[in-house]
Image (cartoon, rainbow, N blue to C red; front, side, top):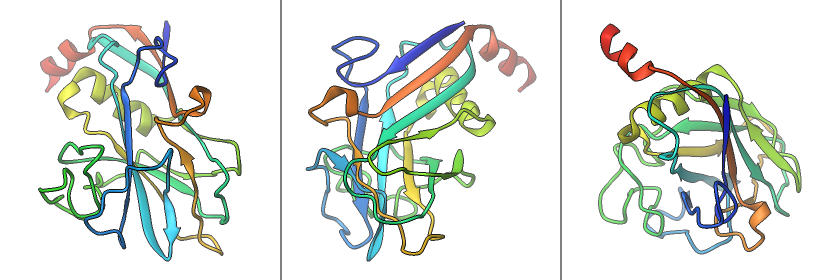
Length: 206
């Protein structure tokens, strides 16, 4: 069993830069928001979301995922009680410095504004503590999503982090991005896997 960790500038090594991220907002329309060292999922009068993609190509495509966690540090912008959710991006590969609520690359439109969310969430109901880590996983849906990305890398279009509207007041959070100056504050993923023949089996039964 192997545990692979991914954090820009830290792991698997200091040269790793496989996380990319950006904020998009309903009110921002076609104005790119990739100018901060934080992204802002939540409600700022209207909704904002955060886009992420992780390069997992160092994990063999025949690996069998047994656990997956994504962790995000909230930093100095927590003023609500909404829970966070995570959806895979179902279509289109966003461009980090150009994506907006309406367009995934600054020119071409999402199928559905706001990030082309997959129909089912990979996880919901996650608490975002003030000035602490919000951890997604490990669970069946998130594990299955990461397994898909590893077995079939072309399906890895990234994911969207957002907040539900259950809280009062509605939540808005400042989550440290992959460009945060303090390396240890950047988003991180931990993937536990074993060697296997999963892609071959899936082809046989598919």
